[in-house]
Image 1 (cartoon, rainbow, N blue to C red):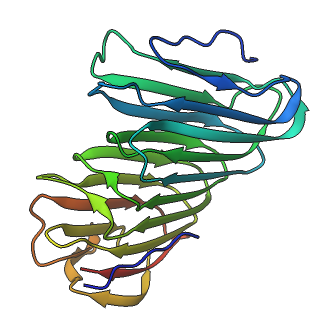
Image 2 (image 1 turned 90 degrees about the vertical axis):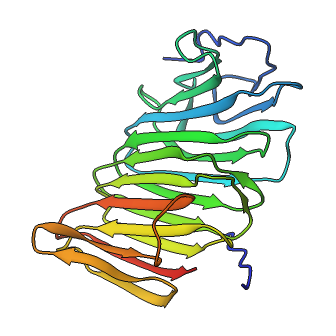
Image 3 (image 1 turned 90 degrees about the horizontal axis):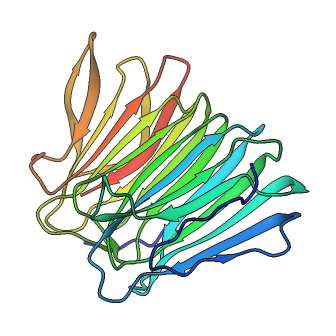
Length: 255
């Protein structure tokens, strides 16, 4: 199978346990950089929260680099100079097997863009919410999969999901839940041994440039159109798009 590489408040208190965080200085500026190494000997996974993004529009890009020593590298750009709103990294007692990273967009200084680079030491759950989001999420470069959730919700915007053969998985895949983007672009080239499923509402047309090893496997007036491989057993890449009739989906699906 041909492999495809498609790459296209204030900072008040930062709570860190056993981790090193570098914060952009000075604090009154438009660009902020955060970076952290994955702690040696750790077995924890990570949970990324990008929440309450309320700018006129915010571009969010999440990519992976084949680096087991990196927990994350994040660059934040605001529309206007100021102090950044809220950023924290902590190990919650209620989720002892995870590092929680939170970047909160509420406040007077609106975020224009967030660029996140994640490593390959562990798997990442991702939760994003806001308004007018343009999101690009690329699973490549050895990204780790463990059946984790990715949930992204906005009132409008564009979402690009790119999933290549170059990922690592065992007996589970990835579950992606997307809500209310105006346009969804999906480009999937599954690795050997992984199945796929894409669900879109029946009144949202899915236009595609390529569909190899996938087909329309379920549809109906009162249920979504489901495009999938012949099997939907785990390990499975499952993408669910919740949208209305004024929204669109496009893509390329390859097994």
